[in-house]
Image 1 (cartoon, rainbow over the protein chains, first blue to last red):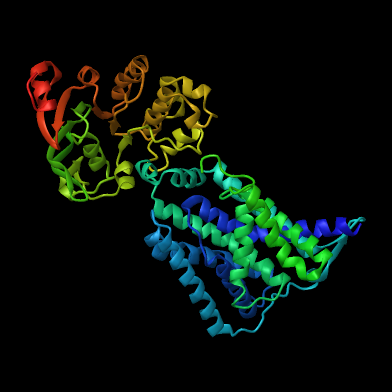
Image 2 (cartoon, chains in turn yellow, brown):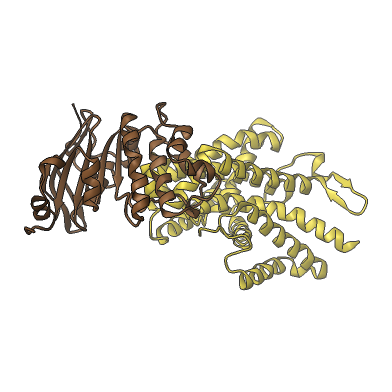
Length: 287
Length: 235
């Protein structure tokens, strides 16, 4: 019984990691940009929601709704003004720029909000649980996982059912020919980063409601996100969800054996998958 | 009426100059062919017209507007649409999606749509759900031409559409050309296959080492003149 509970809690935790990773996967899948500031952008999103909660007295769920267009705009402007300038054949400039961005975000948040831990308080739902007979699950972890599935389904619909999604895939395949079809890669990339920031905001909301956060925790979230993306296969959205679940289950199983092994077990699972499937579990056929 | 002209078109790849002042004229409804040996500058000319390579604004004039400096996406939006060399289909898109991406940057209603394109190339309707790159070379070329037609181009720029295809397939591809012209599109064809170019074009430009060495109507050009313009030596 304990192992079923461990497994279920791991799967639900995987939903949070999948949310961390989905935005990263989206951006990498379209423009091959490895965004080292992704974790810090999640933390920035949590602070934006916190500011809205404090200023307007809203519940974090409603505050996140208000934060969505703000974060979309931040992502759009960031891509147009900064990241588009460094994208090209050489992958080093975007790595350096996003690393620098990570440092800037961390220090700016530290300057504005100090290193004190913060938390988003959603109310009674925070500790609510559902008794499913075999196991009891928290409502928040369940909501997180459901949100991850909804986000992945929505992104898949966007990718495979809309003109914008076709433009995303075409630009990812061949940006020069895409331009000959009237697609402007700079605009497409800006839209992609804006949409990734919407996912980041959802991830930030759950991060802030489920744990304390401070300006320095971004890089650790980035590592979880990276691991989920790489386990799933670069650019595969469903693979990202599976990757998140594998890390989540590995962590809860590790913790069940020995609490000190929780984080380590997630990283070990990542290394095992990497050793046997270097391209991830669901690599894209044309990568 | 002149729809498109280039004046003093030049192009460089680093220190290497590929074009030395190429002048072309395309009349409304006309089909011109650019022929020449490998490295003559044919593809570079099309890449310059389509905006892949930038130029001085006045180097390319379309419908009275100087467009030489515009990016490729903006030029496509004005109706100059390219069928690139080697097809360059999008591998992650199906046949149908490759066709529909042709309308992304130019949503103009006209003769061409999914139904008329697949009536021109019926095999594409049968294979509409297949990944575009799973098709044969000839079928892929049909997708590439269909993708460009979906935007209802005013000028269709075809770069080596016979390259690497069997003669029977080339014949099928070129059999579509009259209908494309009847739909109102003017056409610029870049070809190494001289006989094919002479069959479909109203006028021919021959390039050698980045310069126009011969121009005229196919009926006016004799074999020796073309040979001399093509290779720089008489037959």
